[in-house]
Amino acid sequence: MIEAPENYIRKKSSTIPFGYEIDENHKGFLKPVPDQLESLEHVSHLVYNKAISLAEGVQILENKTNRSLSRMGLKKLVDKKYEEGLGNKSKSLLDRF
Image (cartoon, rainbow, N blue to C red; front, side):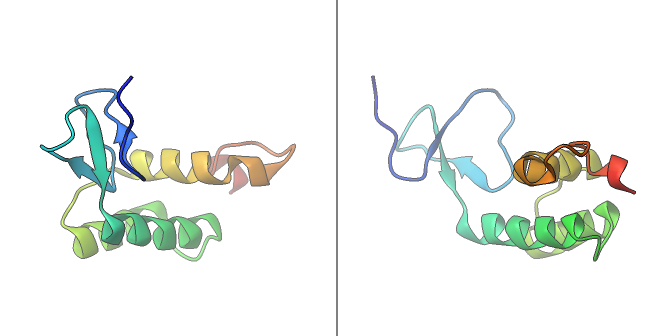
């Protein structure tokens, strides 16, 4: 089995996740893009705490990173990141409004 370089993830489909890019030197793995991951972390936190909407979060990410992400894509990432912190409450971000 081929070992992934540190912080790389295995490519699972044709879709490249937000915060990663193809690395020609390591076939089958995706290289992290620190600026995109930091922006995603910041925006996810703001969306989770209801400081900004999903639409505003998507716009901020597109302006900062020049990569597009749908509102539902951002919602899915926020739900996944914070689902353990929701306890017995609904796991969906939209159900909290």
